[in-house]
Image (tube, rainbow, N blue to C red; front, side, top):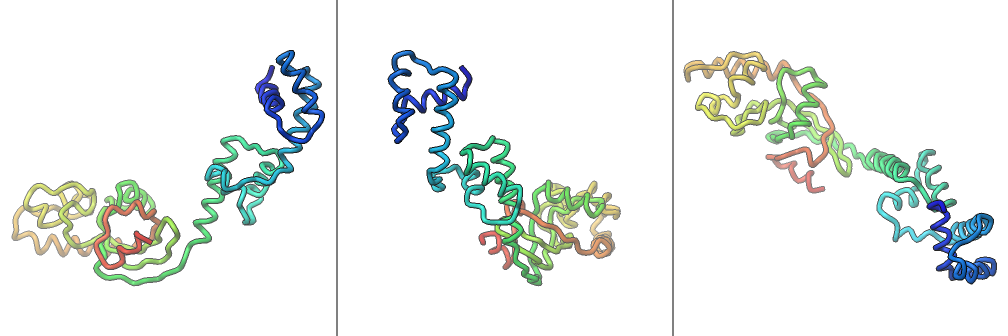
Length: 249
């Protein structure tokens, strides 16, 4: 017997509906322990038809399936899945996940709010993956781990669109790779020797070299300028500044 046949057999055995046909099958099933192929086929049609006519208890559905059942947007893909589920009461796990992701993306897009908040003195520490993505998108020679946010452009439920630039301030860690700075000169410059090389400025060896070095680094940062990027709120490791409250919204 197929898996479907086993399910239908169990549904007949536990049936408490109004179909006389199914009720007449129950004694036979109890006696012989099985149904003929024709009986299975007929029972399946009756039972599925009854199930389709019942109201879906959306509140009892898993989160992903509930999102599809309650969907009221215009995505044909999701609406087709919704219709299929309401008709057959069944979707594959792959269909459920794909449908849920489509609903989630639409919700995020619809929740975006333009803010255009100009900021001063807001430095954030980014996760390494976010910094890597910015590096690759803007073809930078370094990973912008510590950046000064100059403007919050947009906000959704889960993410922010920011305009920022590499910070010129020291944050206790290398502003490019995020590693702890161990030697005195690196702590004074905010960059380690390797990352300093990536930025394109020779790392100073004496304190007398610091003023020139800082000016050269400042010029390099100004050359790079500002960059825009979307970042999940969870991708911001630390936010020092007044706008950090946005992470809680």
